[in-house]
Image (cartoon, rainbow, N blue to C red; front, side):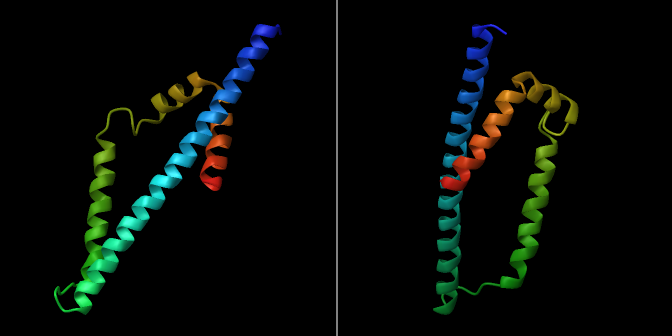
Amino acid sequence: MNIENISSFGATIGGGFFVGILIGYALKKVVKIVAIVVGLFFAGLAYLQYQQIFAINWNKIPQISQNVVTTLANATTQIPGFNSGHSADIAISNFGIPLTGSMSVGFTIGFVRG
């Protein structure tokens, strides 16, 4: 092993770790914002029902959400290369174990600390 291989290996691990932290941090912030928006929406609906402005059938919401999840699951199977295990495995292996490993550790730290 020469010095160029070690520096390239270190840059791959460090860069993957840093990018993973950024992705994890950003994803956690987005999830928090979406949770707040959805929570406020349902709180507003509950308040409007309490004021008898709207009549909401709360028993129908799980059925509708199940239909939405089924539709999204069917839509993801239509994306080329998304559901085929072989092409995804090849694409991940092209990045290399050091990059994906350091990126996953960085993502975990960024998501937990975010």
